[in-house]
Image (cartoon, rainbow, N blue to C red; front, side, top):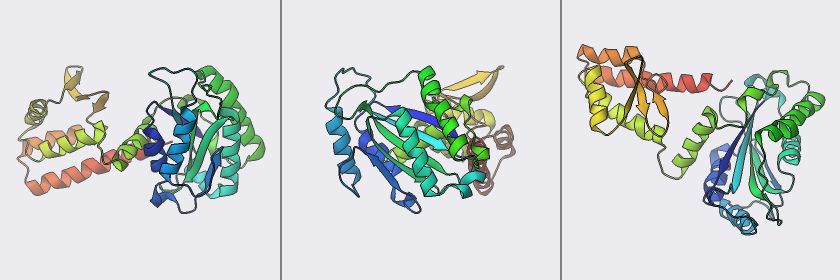
Length: 285
């Protein structure tokens, strides 16, 4: 199991994040667990209102208050066949009892990504009706949540041999969370920084006359490049994006020196997408 945590500081997340985890195409073979939520079969808007009403009770207010957490509990693909909804429900209940026992919470399971079973657990940044923050330190997270969860899994579900908790992978925004955030933005009709860059790269790749021309056209678009060992390596945005990670390997960029036809460029762009998808898949476990 990999445990990851993402925090949100804008009340709009009550709609965007919850709308994302309960999206229509993920409802098959799923379930919805709620805690301190009133009513059944609630819409995203109704859930938003209950989280918003509870957030209004916050005692200590600051600009950077965390209003919502989304924690993801991921399991090894080979353990998917051993993970029925009953087990996942018990795991979710145990996790909430350790991490957010007094918070408003909703959770569901996602299965539709190539047997990559994972739980989405969303809970309020303050206790239900008390207004007290549930912020937790990194060390407390390990001692009071991760280690007890590890023991619970070993004692109750020893058959999940491949999903042992990986301590080095938690309590940070990692690649999978970034990918989820991109999907949330997409659901809102917006493009993430990465998606915007991919669109620009594809547009320029279709017309660039050489690798150097490719870099020059990017800079003309206002894209800032960065170098490593005196070689252009990637793009410097809010974070760094290596060309290789975006699918543009050195071989593909060097092919621009060959006076490519549009048909050949489109074939290479398809290869770029396959490269990026493969890297995303390999980064999960």
